[in-house]
Length: 224
Ligand code: 5RP
Image (tube, rainbow, N blue to C red; front, top):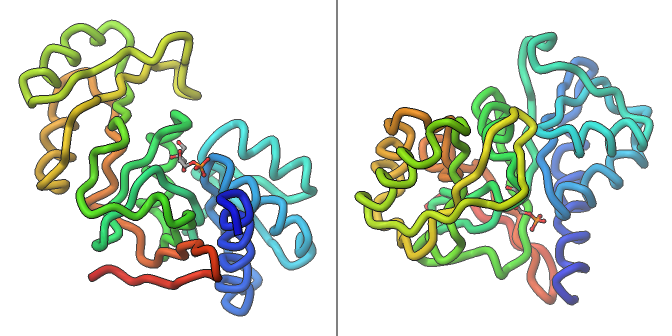
């Protein structure tokens, strides 16, 4: 399997994983990105069994609707049973870097509400130490320079993501050259900077299950 086929395989594996657990009142949280898109398309095939979804981005909401799936506002549901999303990196504890597509804040909110977070990735995303992938930070526009200076003090090289506005009307700083040896501490420290909405480290709310695409099939990993 090539990388794209691995993404399709994990999307299908996620469907197989949740399908037997679906109940009449299940709400499915949906991530953002190319792997999540494959999941949305697979979910569309069983639309009659899906009561409700909530989306982590406008793009995913539009794709869900295109697939004939019902999309709800998060505030109008009591709970989210599953959250299915890709990632830019995962370590063995299933702590993640997310936000390559810029949807990190809504992704983190839906993940926080979900009973079970199922991450779907091809094998290139599994790393020993998080941070080869530049860490996205969503920032209130007027705080851009202040936050960038604070990120430099923490040891990173923040770069403004040109021409990009998040679904929440904010900007993204991508932090390069920033190996994350202590994800819990760094997630909190960055979020403590005034003007930061949130950052793409998912350490306090890691995935519960990682479905990892390998050339010869899908491996199921739980946090170590
Ligand atoms: C979007 C994300 C995505 O999950 C992440 O970028 C992975 O994307 P893809 O499935 O396209 O590799 O966090 O904000």
